[in-house]
Every structure is written in C-alpha cells, then in structure tokens.
Amino acid sequence: MSKAIVVIPGDGIGEEITAAAVAVLRRADHKHSLGLVFETHQAGGAALDLYGLPLPERTVAAARQADAILLGAVGGPKWDAVQPELRPEKAILGLRKALGLYANLRPIRVPASLSEYSPLKPEIVSDIDILIVRELTGGIYFGDHCEATVIDGVEKAWDIEVYSVPEVSRIVALACQAATLRRGRVVSVDKANVLASSRLWRRTAEQAAEKYAGVTLSHMYVDNCAMQLALAPKNFDVIVTSNLFGDILSDEAAVLGGSIGMMPSASLGEGPGLYEPIHGSAPDIAGKGIANPVGAILSAAMLLRHSLTAETAAVSIERAVDKVLADGYRTADLYRPGLTEVSTEDMARLIERNI
Ligand SMILES: NC(=O)C1=CN([C@@H]2O[C@H](COP(=O)(O)OP(=O)(O)OC[C@H]3O[C@@H](n4cnc5c(N)ncnc54)[C@H](O)[C@@H]3O)[C@@H](O)[C@H]2O)C=CC1
Ligand SMILES: CC(C)CC(=O)C(=O)O
Ligand SMILES: [Mg+2]
Image 1 (tube, rainbow, N blue to C red):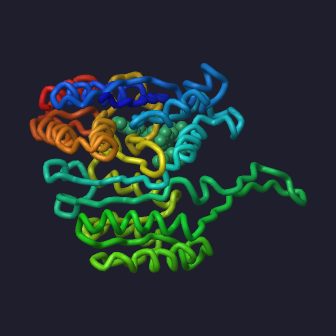
Image 2 (cartoon, rainbow, N blue to C red; image 1 turned 120 degrees about the horizontal axis):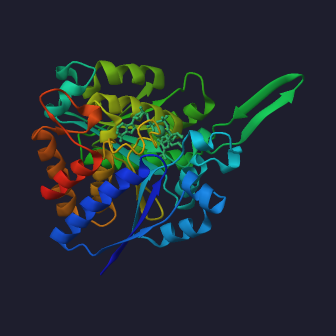
Image 3 (cartoon, protein in one colour; image 1 turned 60 degrees about the vertical axis):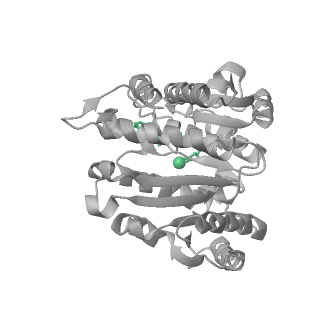
C-alpha cells in the first residue's frame, strides 16, 4: 500500500534541505519497499508570493490527507514588512494548529565523534541524549496578540500566554510516556515563581506524572535550565516545557552538537505527523548549496519511525548519517581542516550510498 508524503519546502534553505531528505527517503524506499509517494505543496513566503496567502487551503487539505508531512522552514527578510496576519511564520503555526500537532519532540544527541565541535568541553557534551518535549499548539504563540497601539499617549503591544489543564496534562503525559522508554527522568521547565500560567503548568504536571510509577518528575525554572544545559547537560533525560521556552531551549541545546543544522524534530498529535529540522530558513546561506541537510534527513528518519512504523528503515538512515560523519565528511558549518568539506547535495548522496 502506498504512503503519501506531503513535502513543503518553504523558504530559504528549505528547498535545498527537503530535496536532500527526499533523495534519502527515496533510497530508503528502494531498499525497504515502503511505497512512498511524494507530493509537493507550498507554504510560507513561497505561498505568499504565489497565492497571496502564507498557508493556502489546498496545502492544509493535502496535509490532512497525507500519511506524513516533511517541512523545510518558512520565513525570511523578504517578507519582514508584510502585515502580521500574512507573515510566512503564520503558515507553520497555522499548520500545527490545523493538524492538532500539540507535541514537538526534539531529540538532542551528541555522538562522541562530534563532541569536539561543541563550544563546550568534550567531556561535558559527549554521549548526551536529551529529549525536549515542547508543547506546540498553545501558550504565548497562540494567545491574544495586540500589535503596537497608542494608549494614553504611549505605544504598547502585548501577547498573552494561556495554558489550560488538558493542554498541560496531555503534553506532560506524553513526556512521561517517552521517559518510560528512556532513563525515566522528566524535568518540567517553567517560570512558576513569576507566571500564573507556569503555576498551573507545575501543579498539572505533578498530577499528570502520578500515573507513571517508574518516572521521576522534577521542576526547574527556565533561566536555571538554560544555564544547566550548558553546565551539566548529561544530567537531563526528558525536558517538557511550553511552546516559547521549548523553542528557545532547543536552539540553545542544539549548540551542544556544534550546529543547529544537525537537529531533527517530529510534531505529533491528532493529525498526520509533521517532520522538520529545528532550524529556520537560514536566509544568510540560502541558495549557496552549503546548508547542513542532516537535521532534515534525521527528521525524515523520525517520519519513518513515528508515522510509518518503519523502524528498520529509520535506523538505516540514522546509521548512514553516523557512518558518513565518522568517515569525516562535513558541510561548511562543521568543517575543520583535515576533514572533507561537502555540499548539501553531496552530503545527501553520501548518506544515500550508505543506506
Ligand atoms: N520552523 C520554521 O519554519 C522556522 C522558521 N524560522 C524563520 O527562519 C528565518 C530565519 O531565522 P533565524 O533566526 O535566522 O534562524 P535560522 O535557524 O534560520 O538561522 C540561525 C543561524 O543558523 C544557521 N543555520 C540554520 N540552519 C542551518 C543549516 N541547516 N546548516 C547550516 N547552518 C544553519 C543560519 O545560517 C544562521 O546563521 C526567520 O524568518 C524565522 O522566522 C525560524 C525558526 C523555525
Ligand atoms: C515560527 C516559529 C515559532 C518557528 C520556530 O522557531 C520553531 O518552531 O522552532
Ligand atoms: Mg525555533
């Protein structure tokens, strides 16, 4: 039976890195007979230019029908001046909401062979294995926004963070479930010393975790967590946190492995899963053929694992990535003298050959 994969390249390096991931998926399909059928759709700035909307209904409809979605990234300076409702970033938020993708899994692994790339000491980062579980359809990104308005002669703007008990309960339950298959430790990250939404989060997290006997739940303030990720990242197993804090902490944690270009993600929930690297559209390097496609390729492996239950094929991609890195091939972001620098396309080709 065939499996429909909707590919949304988006903007900037999105096109280059999704092409790399699709090439690797085609190879995995050839080897493991997965029956993949690819369909490309537009979102973000690309869709705004073509259809006048960042998230056309036809893209949402195709995504709903798909078995899984592979996304590059959206946004870029070209669209910085458009009105807020039409910004390319609205596309990714809209798609997550439309598909009910409330859980964003962001694994951070640093194999010993890559620990030298971290700005931190190798002994601090080698063999890190952290899973950040970020709430994805609530919080401040989805609360009421008020664009700059003059009130009593002063210009003001605001964004409101709202979390409900069911929203917190389901994401913490998912994090605890994930922890039962790992080292059994969940750190819930909030700012409960200041924010009412965080106090509700903390209380609800306690209740949700009670059902998971083998899981230890602890709490940490987000400012301390940002520091602990740099000081002692090996102490973390699963981190569960809000949309905003998860967005920020995962970019910080990505540095542990030397490049944000290495980091994949899976967004899961009610609809088909959506898979994208954690980085953005990287306009500074777009079109140069130098973007690191590994985050997108490892996202494709997560797609096989979580949406198609094709574990063997997923592992074959992950092993191929490890082999190519161990053989000393690097895109520009991770290049060091003595290693072999390759383009985005060549990196994909090397990974394909090792599947
Ligand atoms: N899911 C999405 O669609 C996301 C979209 N964005 C959008 O992307 C645009 C650019 O955002 P930035 O803040 O610059 O973040 P970014 O993640 O695009 O880039 C930050 C830095 O990381 C580098 N980088 C990112 N991905 C890389 C890769 N695969 N290989 C090598 N280097 C890589 C970039 O060159 C840049 O120096 C903005 O419009 C932003 O809103 C940002 C994050 C996520
Ligand atoms: C538009 C942003 C919320 C995207 C982002 O930074 C992310 O999801 O990591
Ligand atoms: Mg982000």
